[in-house]
Amino acid sequence: MQPSTADPRRRRVLILAGILAGLLAGVSVIRAATAPDEAEVCARVLDLAAGAGEDASEADRAACERHYAELRERSGWLEWARVARCTVTAQTLSDAGGCG
Image (cartoon, rainbow, N blue to C red; front, side, top):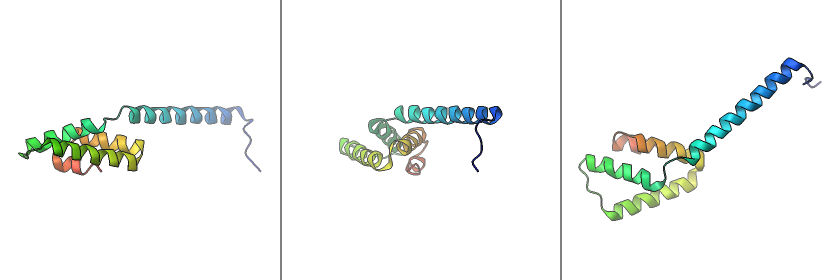
């Protein structure tokens, strides 16, 4: 026997759960849509490298952007948002490397 949704209290709980799920999905979409792009991520990685005393050329920047573009394609938008934000906020190259 299926549970009845006619009970007003149960109906309110189900409606609130649906609203909450919708809000969480909306926040996820917004966060993913506003994630840093490959150029921003690579700018941060190259800044961290310079801070560690490593020289970076324009070829390194292009290789970095290719790497992160491929990673973005493979990982999907939610995972990309996580990796990009983690990398941009990293304090060291080691931290950035651990982002994904």
